[in-house]
Image 1 (cartoon, one colour):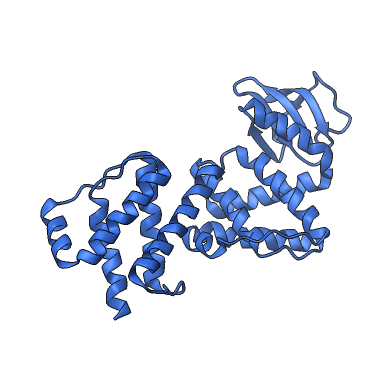
Image 2 (spheres, rainbow, N blue to C red):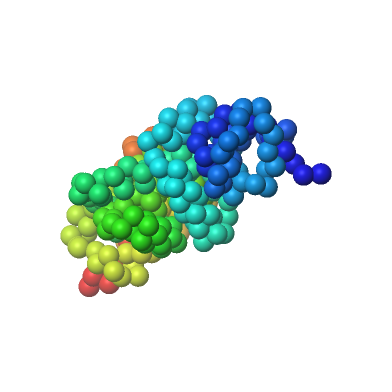
Length: 281
């Protein structure tokens, strides 16, 4: 039997909020899905191009308040964007992206049309940390440029990539922002301490940043990596500069994340740092 939902509210011709027999409140998006429909009417769920939940009352309110400020065609276009992201990332997205990314892109388009731009000083770090999300974000920006007839600033690629990463990892944007800014700070500490300028186009830089990201992720969730005391003692004796620097970095991470750091992180950091020193000479 064809599954039906009951309309609670028609937000516009393309968006309705409905009551689902299992999931309770759902949002249905589809071309003309709300046209001439009233509260209490039933509708086949298969008529929607996209169905998602809004469990958080605050997100629901934000989404409802956002819609009057954007064209109905734009909501339809955002549905195309989200389907593209989901297909390219090959996984379902956290539902919060419907609110967050729609809000971000709607106002970013408005800024671009008025030639107002925001710089993104961490663009290179974002590309290095989240290469797949960055590539998909580039495709999204191309879709927007073609649809709106504008030239989105390059910095928007980074912001959209962060929204995508948030949606595929269930991390908050606040945590993601804090983490990549912390990684940028750690790289600066390394450059200052070793008196080098790391070439960001090298494999060593990519490996270092990816390792720092994994370290920050492990610390964030409280995961221990495990290690050997004998190896730590050997590294401390053989590479004192890098070993001491690794502990300096650990203290920065402890302070910024406000969480303990497994001692074994020093082993892996020392090895990465020594690779940089070897390539410096």
